[in-house]
Image (cartoon, each protein chain N blue to C red):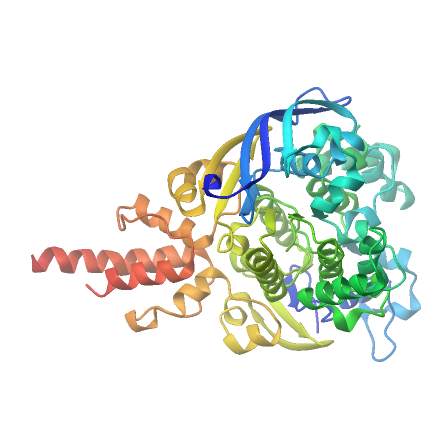
Length: 288
Length: 258
């Protein structure tokens, strides 16, 4: 699927071992991610997914020492040869814990920090801040201090700060964990709109497939530093369900239900990934 | 609201609804400006946080607010020492707790070298170690994979059976659906509903009010009413039982008619 679009990210034989760690965190990673793709990156705790994301904006190897091998290109530029500050223009990173990236005295100043450091004009900074706060629903919070916000509000502000940099890739590390379910859907919907309207490549790291599965076109599953599955969400879920559940990935409950009914020989179709398709398939059977 | 020993309670509601503020009232970290909170009959305004914490243990949403020791072992033993337990009791309790939370192999590791999900479990262990009668967990499932969640669920049920009360603040509707605890639903600083999870999580109005979404099973069963299936199904286990029965009936009907 990446073949039809320009490649934003290309890894060939990428490996990484943290200094002092006995084993490789990444081992022979080969992947091409196209511009405007929405990719769900998942796998059990410690599988290497966060390490892979840290490579994308140069946090590895610049801030986390260790040994890197193979090749990783972002927008055609080799990550190993570039500074993190330069890569940050291309790759925006929303960390798991939003507190780790908010520091200014007000929300508005926090969102403006990135663009101010790019040396843009006042008007351009103003435009970007307004746009980013609008897209994340944080306008009403603009004069509050980040520490006054709830976890979910902080997460949206962190996202706004990253958007204001107009990156070509956004990495979101478990973006929905601090959000109430409706806000989580809103944020994911907003991210998906940005992808559609601006062609931003979106990489979401998540344990829970139910929230992200409907937006993601592609799922990449990692285990022990390697990519063990890569494809369309429906295809991978259907073909690898038992394996994924063995890895501790939070599979959509409708898929789980279907796999149990299938085991009993009561249904035969492919596993549904959304409630809507499960409703349709069950209704057809029950109408008989 | 009232929490009894052996209760399992989930506090749910939108971001900023007041869930964490309510949780912090339970061990006196926050004192009421109006009204009254009592723990085993003691007014929280008349007791110190240290005194109340012995009975009410709170595990914060962000483990980094709690962790500071050099090793996981020291972290988990810290409060026990402060509460004046004998050294051999401290060692035994630490071992037991680390074992129960699958952390024994990290005993001598710095908590700060662990992943987010693992740090979260260390924070939980640090509180569980002194066996408070009331355990308050703020968003315990964040960063936990499915197997860890299952482990957490069994652990909570075990604590319940020992007569301990567990209160969790959570957004994780699917986790609540599988556990089926009592739910206290909050919105804009007020409690708007209380009831069993399957009742609350299948109620469209309440879900809307508290900015939640229905668990997938509730969404599914809300659209299967025409086949005589109940609407208040929230967990996969019950869903499977009901559908097995219905689908088997269909199978027999089809077999008979052909």
